[in-house]
Image (tube, rainbow, N blue to C red):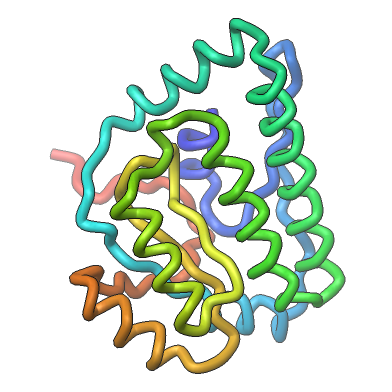
Length: 184
């Protein structure tokens, strides 16, 4: 549900998903300074790896259905980290995001062997050695885009990632959500 709801609502969105499937969507209340610092300190890079999100999620879902306690525990941990990220942003503690992203990525990697690979691990370590205080892959994992929180020395991070053939993808938050671009 995350992908569909995020696309529909856009922006910085918090979702609470009940066991019965009901979704409650809210937006964290951020000061303008916090929002600008967050947007300025997030840098996204293309990993150069494509993956099947459904394959990664299927592997994770099968482990969850088997009630593999480690997977279930990591999912709970990821949910708690999400709540901490929301609280940090609402409290204006934007620099807490890097270490929280790092904790999220470490927990997510334990969900499935398909979430990461040696090349992605190397990109992550490159980011961490070059100014990032945390990062994570966007989406299910296995490839696509990696985002880093980098409060200082962004040129150093950009240069290091470019040297790894991982081009930056500049972005801004979009608060409009889904819209029809072309309707014949």
